[in-house]
Length: 465
Ligand SMILES: Cc1cc2nc3c(=O)[nH]c(=O)nc-3n(C[C@H](O)[C@H](O)[C@H](O)COP(=O)(O)OP(=O)(O)OC[C@H]3O[C@@H](n4cnc5c(N)ncnc54)[C@H](O)[C@@H]3O)c2cc1C
Image (cartoon, rainbow, N blue to C red; front, side, top):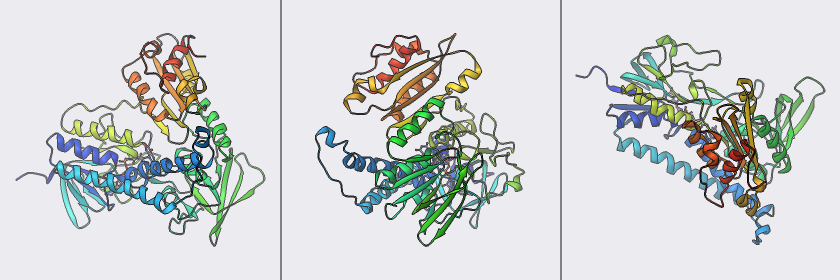
């Protein structure tokens, strides 16, 4: 009889966990995955990446029809919003993709153990009233919304909501206050702004999009303002009171000063996410959390408890689906005795607004701290495709080592920046120089030509400016 029920038990079926489970099964390991949600796919497929992109995509069409962008191209339409249908197509996308993971589990003979898991010891996990043993346990429990002290989120009521509630609003709010000018706040704020809401974004820091390149952050402020968002930077929220179906948010300058109030029909709290470890019983296996409440691992994603591994949002690093997925593949390969590696220096990040903001590698500020650099920039205004499509906003910026010319970071603002950044990530993974990119033939006319031109600009010789 086998010593354990499974070779691998994955806890959590988000992009980290479900990918780890599939890879482990592909490698011949007997695999199960515990998931407490009704559907597989985690935050990303159920209430994150996918539903937000469904709403962003649909609202972008509405906005283009409403704001005259289509009329500019000879298409005159007066859009009428059918919010129920917009929500229905979002739910459809989620249903299709989460069902797809269930199919992949069956195909790969992975047992989905339904329920929330809790450690009994390092190799025994309780899921509901079942006890399951495994030689290896991978913690992939992801993250949840960080609450703002003193502000109560009630997604059912729909006045003070988190990102999950903001995806489900039953009507377009007249006034929306977004607390936090990060990726999620700007994406969901953009959805409702496009559909007709007056959106005010309150951000504690002096620029939007913390973590991104300084110039990109500055430019993002200009772009969102131009689109009609009101930005309250260097401002902190001190409270929110709900009366009936309205909220009053109290804010004051981050550095201190006179308070003011903002009225809103909907307040979105989007100040970040925190690792999800509650109820896992980590004390039973002697696994402690770091100061940020995350599980620490080594380079192979092994925790300090033998046989227990961790990946995705629950460990340090950017909270991104593709980072979790890559770690899922790597951890399964390491468990199988292969060499699974994730290069955490090359993880692209994208804000899926219009235009999109994307970056990979070091910001100019970080690169300067490490040594001498050269920077090449090219404006989208001078890119023939962007110009033809009436998409003038943005630029590409390439940061290279001054001595070796090796590319250290690439930042793009463009309608398709999220797609463009893939070539930059691949080039960096291969250790490319800016000259390598400059001498790579790019199809014409494409937005990606701006990456080639920015690379040419590193040595001062772009053609089209
Ligand atoms: C609104 C929004 C938009 C986003 N958009 C993007 C985007 O466009 N691109 C991007 O890269 N990232 C995006 N993200 C982030 C992305 O969703 C996460 O980085 C990603 O889902 C992390 O994957 P994970 O597998 O680590 O965890 P999760 O996806 O959080 O999955 C963890 C799963 O574990 C389950 N679980 C937790 N505890 C237990 C337990 N004890 N037992 C059993 N199951 C348990 C949970 O139910 C959950 O399903 C977005 C997030 C949000 C909220």
